[in-house]
Length: 100
Image (cartoon, rainbow, N blue to C red):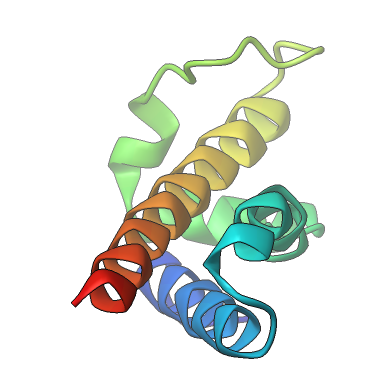
């Protein structure tokens, strides 16, 4: 497990940069959702540890309604959205760098 959610976001952003270098920024756009999903913890203990480390995760209402309204599904959705936001931000940076 990455030590913090920020570390997990950083790892995903680095992986996106590597993917974009090999395949181009346009292809990276399609890869973002798969990449975000692969960086969300799957174990309940890990999800709860992230919530303990950052209590705002447990208090954040997800933008997308999870299929079940349980603490774990809400945490999963919030973490996914956090990683996804970071990946879109990284993709915009990559695209800006390519334009320069």
